[in-house]
Image (cartoon, rainbow, N blue to C red; front, side, top):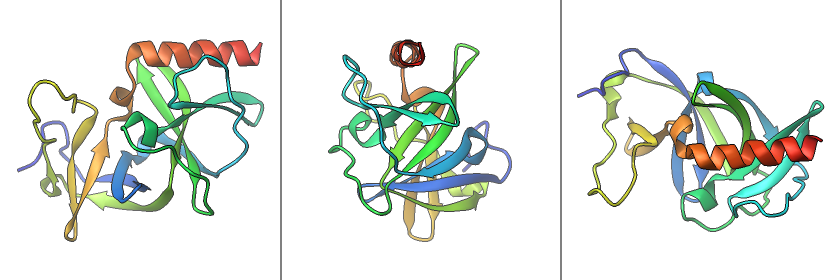
Amino acid sequence: MSIAGILETTQYLTFKLDDEVFALDISKVREVLDFTTVTKVPRTPEFMRGVINLRGSVVPVVDLRLKFGMTKTEKTVNTCIIIVEVKVDDETTILGALADSVQEVMDLEPDHIEPAPKIGTKLRTDFITGMGKQNDRFVIILNIDKVFSTEELALVQEKQTESAG
């Protein structure tokens, strides 16, 4: 059974957070950077680790582990920053997302993707596009546009503007 909206084979960038494998639609990924110095910005949510200078632009860096209720990302030789485009309310924001390691770019057929699990009404799962099956493992396919709320992104954009000015 495939998910409405995913009708063709799509390429995904897979990455690890803790022991879980997550995937992002490759069209949302601009590039992958080695972990670099992140400048902390005061009075931001804990999941916002700070900003980096990307070829002269101020790019906010978020810790997806913290966003998903895991422990803070620790720097290792594999830690990287995935530069993504997030679209909220017809506005595109460039974000850096910390990942423990990037795995690979993989093709997923629509019939290898199951709908996101429905876990009652208390837990939000709208940021999960679906569960991809790769060999014997599940890959959690994220809808990066829905991982952060409009309010959180507005805060990130506000801090980005302040840091640039």
